[in-house]
Length: 232
Length: 344
Image 1 (cartoon, chains in turn purple, yellow):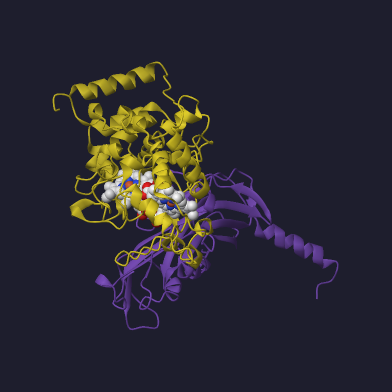
Image 2: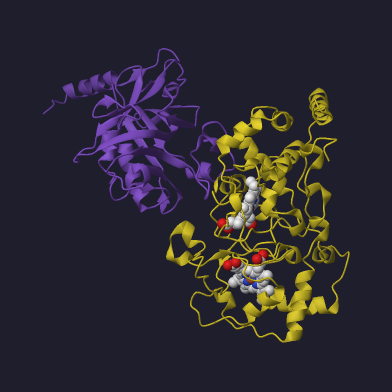
């Protein structure tokens, strides 16, 4: 039990030690993807958990949007880039400058995985949201929030390919995920996606493709976003 | 360099030098409602409309450069297609639906027979990517256009940036299509006090108002809704309409209520083009199985029309034809841009 006198002091120490205050505006957010704790290499064969089969990832793209830095419950910085398309095949693309003004203190990051419904219902947009990025469903309206493609002998599809195109912006299939994560007290912010853990929830044998807003997509999307943690 | 390019360069220079804004307003008559399309998000300009028009007529948008938007949406058919009930795409492949007429799109809330598309800007991605239609990919089109001598200039003129992007292609195509306004039919002239209905048309109007206007609502002659108008499912196509998009039982066999303007130009009718003649359509509505639970409530009271009333109804429907729109040279193939001089 804490004594009444030491309690405020304890709180003070806790708060003091858990904020990071920016010293320059060069703060960066970088994305890492791992498979069995090692950085993922595209097109390389990995062991598929609980099977004798292998798996390889050929394409991994997803949107991180509306990134905010928070101090407790208060938003202290809104990142200017509203929608960031992370494309794992393009290493130059895995780092985002957050442009945090000097002296801003924060201990949490809040972001969405995917594209919100207002943006989905808007007309043609540019940059990372330009449909030429290959993240727009053509035959119906809406952005694909997450694309994971690859191959595994366990898939009975043509060329043993699997394709997961997860998205949807209309209820009951509104797939946007909002996450808030506690940050470590340091300058670089690293978010790590443990892709092997996502794959454990994908039944590559029974359901090797998800290509439209659906219950299956609604189940997999929160799993994907919960496999993202603050890395070191 | 050919004369066409010199002309365009000249136009770019003039517009830059004089800070010339070529913005235009969407023109529509007072009896029309306010458009649904957010024109502030994509403000109309002459150069964007003209770029969109060139893209609409250019087969470069398809994989093998053979099919343009206009291949299926011909200006003379009010931008529908009359040779085939179902659309024809690259490699002579047959699609699953009838190409709808294109006009008054600025007032339309969703697109396609099943409403799969929610925004006009994004619509073009569907035919471009469909393997049964144009079989192309927007990223590849961006590259093809960038390599042409014509398009970087047109994009520069329209967007102040010669780099072709997917966003700009889609915005330009939408702009051209937004200008396809059909508001100069006899019906409109009567509304404006410039003409009057014959007795027969007047009688037909009454029939229309009692049985058809609840869905095909004046002055656009559509209501932005989806309904079941009693068509039996074509067993070979197995098309369940809006259900395909929402996968919700309540949407099974619902199709978008189309506008009834320009029917003389846009046959055959319905999502699968099953009717060639207006008379067949009217007979369909008078022979509905009103006991069907699928049928829209607005049609559940049987429609009994004498032959005379049917003829009157058709006479009224014909007042919705808009030849001034259908033959408007501004909407046709942009010969001056797409066909270099001396090549005609």
